[in-house]
Image (tube, rainbow, N blue to C red; front, side, top):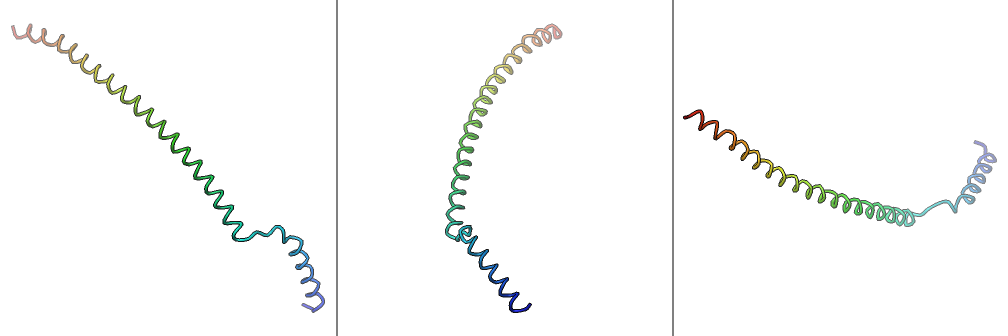
Length: 94
């Protein structure tokens, strides 16, 4: 590359660098922005975890209610079957 052409290219690069210098960021700026972004994401996940924990507690409570109802129905069915089969067995034996 001829010297004159290299000088023109260098001047152009220098002008572009000076023009875009305000757009450059430093490592400290990036770290602070990433830290702020990370903190916001962590806060959102913390809220999400709390919400999910509340939902699971609600499901667990409802499941407990269903279990107690299932136990009641099981006992009722056992009594009903005993009320039907005991007289049949007594009738069959005698």
